[in-house]
Length: 494
Ligand code: ADP
Ligand code: MG
Ligand code: ZN
Image (cartoon, rainbow, N blue to C red; front, side):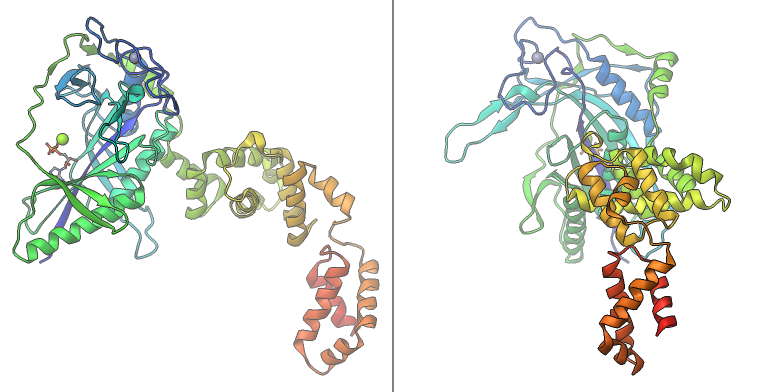
């Protein structure tokens, strides 16, 4: 019998609000001047009083609604007391026993597991989501005997989400965190960038052979999804080996060494912290009525999962293409604009399949060609020279066979660089698919005349010779001829 892993996550997210949680200082994660966004309130001067930021409260409730959570009718803030220099007040305002959001869940995993590596779709329980304030940040200059503290981040609204111990693998932990990041971005409550520390994932892991959970270890400071997955899998293996060797797992906090790809002990759990929680006396308790909650509910736009279903239904895209658009939101919005430009035309096409076909064609051009032309740069519609109208015309020309796929690449490059109309580009360069059989035949005859040796080879049965002749004709026509037509003509004449 093997050891079964049990994993729970604690995820902190910095919210995207104009001001801090309890004062009117700017909440600007990109501020480079240290201790610039500070005031007597977030610096804990005596006699100052906090005022709760309603925007932050709404963002947490909005997140809770998107994650199927129970929303509290009554809630309050509490003081969590501990002494550390990144915390000017000597306590953090947090929430203890009445979080804004209670029980909820998020489904992760593949809906149609096609490959053996696919992750089975499962529902991961959410225990709670609460609101607190972030701390300042410390720096320890190398070789110096002092530390520096920057309070720009002190008092920034911080949301904490805790999951049930429902997760069973590194991959599933990663999927949960990735899907949560997407949702937070779609809700526009946070940029949730892990590298910037805007989203911080802590994992709790234990393994056990029985129904009773084993001793858990907590891993902190994981700054990418890749590391979350690796650290969990490493820790499962480490704990399993320990137990199999008859040893014990120590309850402790561990860190991640990315060079060696191992977890290491940071500190063993001291006596459970006594934070001396008590209700924050300077902030009134909160009451939310149905109207308030419904208004927030109505502000929730389309979520990633709904968008996946819609993209499948409306455009017939495959899972990989859909996932590309789900994670490239700006490009997907552009995609939909182009679709609306050709929609009227494709819906009228007699075949009835034109709409799906052109939608797929467009998706391929955006995912491979445009992505390639951008060369790793972000897609920004304002800087992108091709209008949706021109892009729609472009895919229509390809679909109708007015330009070959080789010419299409040249046209797209020109559109990308100049923003010109695709039909103008084709006209100016004389790139239209050659329709005039008379002219093409003339060129074919010329090529045959100029290459007597290759023609002789062909007649002697060399198949490569034909390929060469087609290539010559394509070169003379600069790719505008239809290669099948060229082959047909060559065979006929020869
Ligand atoms: P603590 O009081 O040590 O912070 P919590 O009960 O608050 O522990 O749980 C913190 C996180 O750890 C939650 O995500 C929870 O699901 C998870 N967790 C709790 N017990 C275990 C366990 N035995 N193994 C793995 N994860 C666990
Ligand atoms: Mg806890
Ligand atoms: Zn302030």
